[in-house]
Image 1 (cartoon, rainbow, N blue to C red):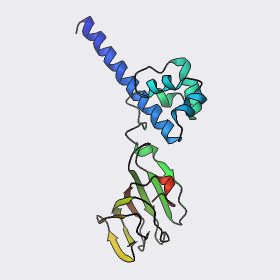
Image 2 (image 1 turned 135 degrees about the vertical axis):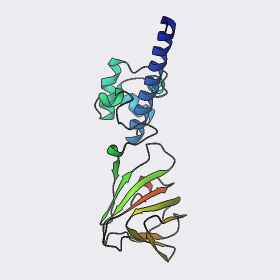
Image 3 (image 1 turned 90 degrees about the horizontal axis):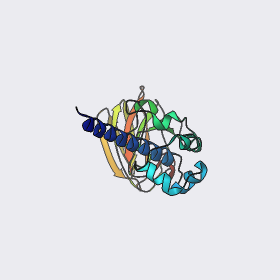
Image 4 (image 1 turned 90 degrees about the vertical axis):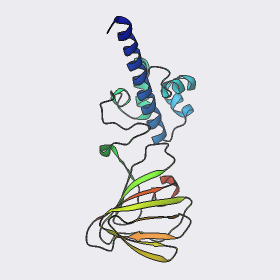
Length: 203
């Protein structure tokens, strides 16, 4: 490999690193529910400069890393970790870095699977034996598949007993509820078009 090829390869790797960092910054900003203007103001940089960083068109310089990390409430390493690091970014969520969602019903936990800014909200819903929700409705559509255990799903007054491997889909505007009638923990991969903050249980 000659000098020109080495230079070209180094430039490509630098560009790819800038894109990865930009996606990570944008993902963290969206996760914190901050606008470009909000984050730029907190970090003491211009909106244009932040926009270029997020689009991978500008390198994240040392003097910007610390205030930007502080504004996002993360360690600087979270912004500049190399591609081999198991961190979340704009397009993926690592299994070890899922964010729990607030839940008001007893015996239920929900972990967010979809990255910030995604059009669909994906979750792993864990329902302990006897756990469940009251009936409720909200905007959107939803789909799910039971991955372990069994679940009782009620949609528009119709009751379904779902076992491992069974799936479902319905309009979220229909009154619905679910519970675990079994003796083992139930897990459901649940996807819908409603943002977690727009539905009572993140459902």
